Image (cartoon, rainbow, N blue to C red; front, side, top):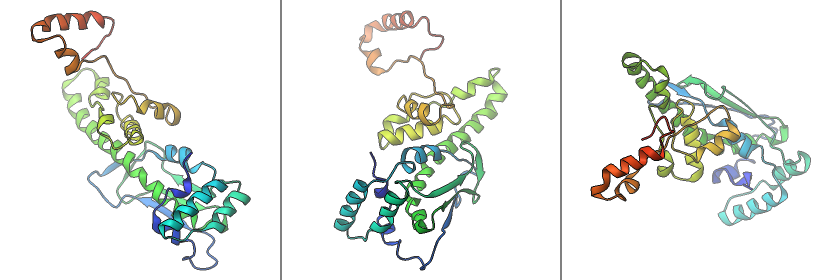
Length: 253
């Protein structure tokens, strides 16, 4: 299990005793400072809330984080975290309000607010900022896919009699180029907010668990290794075998 205490920036560890004495409520918001696109897609919050922020903090988490903090050279709010474990049964006392997942927003608009629900845990609002900033990754992927879809839709309407085809016109092969297994899954699901075609099989597990309304499809397809394995003089036989093998598939590549 992930230790939620560790999922913040080092400088956050020293903030709990920097707020004015008697501070009971902190209210923060998240918004885009600008960017390439005028319209963006809000996406990814449910995943980070369900997977991370809904995790229960334990005494073992406190011991590990405190040990790391001591070695790292930063203070540790043991009293605050022990209060969460002992008095709040390990639950983080925060309330998050946001735009609906998949909805669009403009630059500088507030897309999310966060506030503590326990007066003894005002410091916690800033603590979870680091995790919530990871929303910009799925937001960026979904927003770029939206812009591509707008462009495709324009020319699709002018040239095609099949309006559903645009949903499969921008295919995702992003798993192999991602920074991690998790980022591949998150980015893959973000792409599915706009398109239905993907070869990012990894993202399907995350989609089914957190976003079951988002589905992705693919088809049988060749690659260099399967084609060239037949040799230079057997290209016809390769095509014949391929067509025969997948003769029940309506589309192949």
